[in-house]
Picture 1 (cartoon, rainbow, N blue to C red):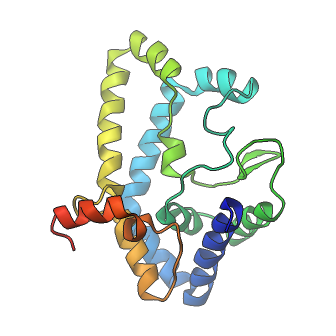
Picture 2 (picture 1 turned 120 degrees about the vertical axis):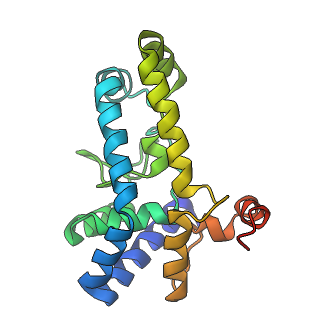
Length: 202
């Protein structure tokens, strides 16, 4: 299975699960993600304050992004779930439809004419800042560097399974309902499974 099909199937399975279980399930999952969504708001505010003007010019306008120029970004299954519960069903349908006819210009398959189709980008995308941008911004602001280190540490508390983490819980919730996906890395990745075993979670 190629990357685009893998992504499309994952997105479809999340959409179909939410459609089957109704708005109550969507609300429950969103409530469980409340702390993570607050974290994402703070990351977005940080990015806007310190990096937006730099990255807009260097990457978007000049198309030099080391992230969006790839056709195979890393997405966790939880990324799909969180995005789905904060998106309107029509927006999710449009995102999935875009995967049927992705752009063919060596750009991320999730980029459309108006930019990224995600309502809430995958955590790997959100936390990516190139070395050049960090060097320039952090040289001018030690406070920004300290804040970024704290945000990076907090990020791991949601997805790094050396403790009970949200991303693992979301995968387990869908798996219990019979949903499977190769994007369920916290249950499929040998490396992450080893971390869980070492932490006594398995």
